[in-house]
Image (cartoon, rainbow, N blue to C red; front, side, top):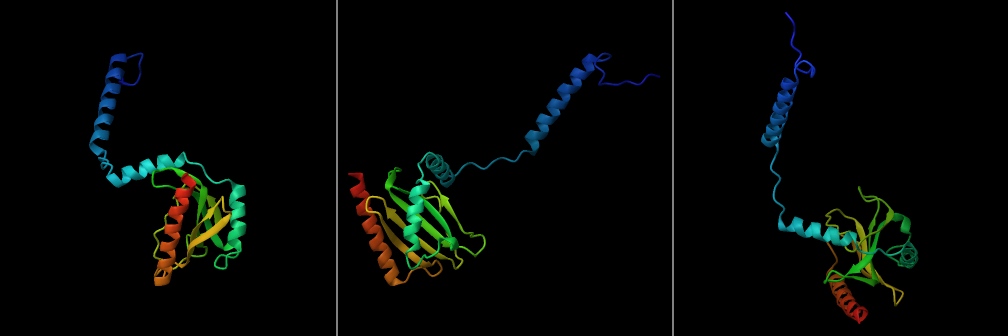
Length: 186
C-alpha cells in the first residue's frame, strides 16, 4: 500500500491548497481567541501621547549654550562641581505650547542614589518631571539668555520639601518668571 504525502504538490495539488486554507483559518481563529483586548486609551494617555509628539518637534538648547550655563551653575554655592549631578536642560515651555528660546530651564539631581547617575541631558521642554520620595538633593531654576543670568528656584533635599521661607522664595521665583515670559513675548 502506498503512503499518502499531502504536501507533495505534484501528486495532490487540491489537497495542498485545502490544507493551506484550513491552516490559515485555524491560525486566524487562534489569534482571535487568544488575543487580549487592548484597553482603550484614557484621557491622560492621550494627552501624554500628544505632548510627546509635540515635544519631539521642539528645539533643544545648543551644547555651547549649555556649556556656558554649566560654567555659571558651577559657581553657585549649592551646586559646585558638575561631575556630581545628573543635569537636565531644555527651553522653557509656555502655557500655550510654545517654546521660549530666551529661557533655558535646568533641573539637577545629585548622583549616587540609584538610578541617578551623573551626566548631562539636553532635552525637549518639560521632559524631566521627577516625582520621587527618596532623599535626593535637587536644584531647579533657569538661565535667562538676554540677561545672561542664572536664577535658582529650589536647591535642597526633595523629601520634606522647602520650608516656609523656601516656599515663599519659590513663589517669588515663579511670579518673576511669569513677568519675564511676558517681556520675552513682546
